[in-house]
Length: 360
Image (cartoon, rainbow, N blue to C red):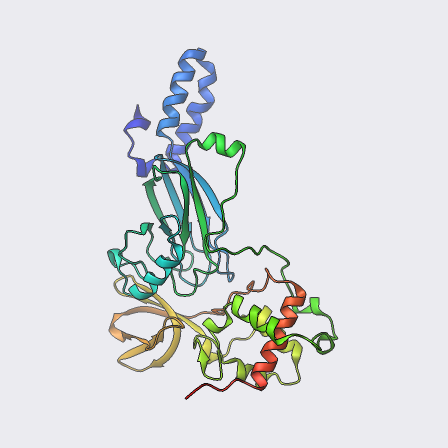
């Protein structure tokens, strides 16, 4: 009875779980009929707890999917172990990409409830605020009553294409767990993990391995890896990372160093592209490149698609830190083969030396 009177949001507390575990161990001491009835009641008050953690420097959640029973209470805890801020937004089936785009439009000041990059949209079911490094946020809700595949995603700009998963809502959780079926990838990605590539994996004859590579294949991989979302070539592309023209020039004749920039982006971070995190006095967390700083304000480029930096008054800043990790995830190429990485490297070298001029 105490458990049944406990609010749903408190049924995932440690002391509640300890009590439920103790009762579960004592039930076999009761007559079978009594134990069966109490076990059924205990199941009704139990709340499914799911912990989703971020993976440091890899821009992904540690759980790609989990199952929930339709209409039953569930508590999802997001633990952020990355240096960058992340959130967790549950969407309707098929709504991931649109929610990510609407989140970009909502911006750092936010839409729904003032949460940064969370749009005020019927496509959003539940959302946490942005969670800073080593922070956590808790969502407690009833799973949808309609079975289906409900995506969850980080709506911080450019994170959605790597940082997502699926809540599979089923009629009978026990039956599903006995014969689980993985959900479809919500953005249609058919790639899987290949290797945790290190620059040493490519040997000493790197320049020889790059001979005869196809620009068309390299360009395709360049697009699939979304390089242009953060890097510019001949003035076209994102501004959150260094222009590839300048990177190729910097490492001219040092192909291994260029590969290292791709596979180990946090080893050497140019001060111009160091990521800063800002905590405002009202609890907002903003992250991006520090464009300008003076006694009155700072200007922060918070995402690669921003046409203008976000202005934050110095009086509104509680704390600001320069992070030691790159905004580029270190495992970006782990879903690509060795040959594909070589094709990409050859293409970057080519366009860096001979960038295609922009029109106009």
